[in-house]
Image (tube, rainbow, N blue to C red; front, top):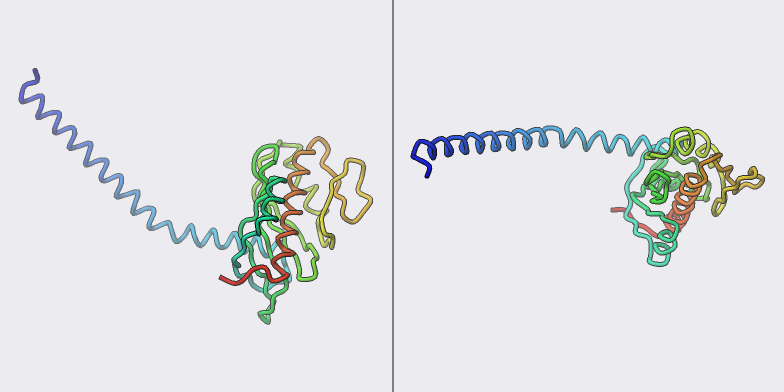
Length: 207
């Protein structure tokens, strides 16, 4: 049976441990409050830079409300594609020039591939920019260099990849040894194009 001294020591140690835990929690909370706004500003800056990269003629971008309808959601889901944030690209006069769509393929070889694409009101795909990718080094990781330039200023309804050399406007040369990555990027772009078409046809509104 523990004597009073043992109990006193245990209570003292428990009190010290509680105090340490409480102080650590308070410090973490303070750090979070101090860095929250800075992180938000950095995130907003990254989004603006990504939008500008795929829609260089726009002066500013504003976020839009958009949710694909059930039919489109099912179609995109079958290809492993999800639509994220969308933005209206505005000219210096405030008039809409087109949209920027965040599109994610969940079927990359190494995980999700997240990209932005800028599409004009006339349906021209200005450019795409890959924001997140974790494919095989030397193969799928070559997507930014080998795939992205192939989508530059194309005006097609959808793209298809080929292993035998692109011969049509809507064809994309697959990365040698990285067909899965090529397919994932192509599907993400096609899904984004479908969302952009719905957006430019008036399928969304400002927040």
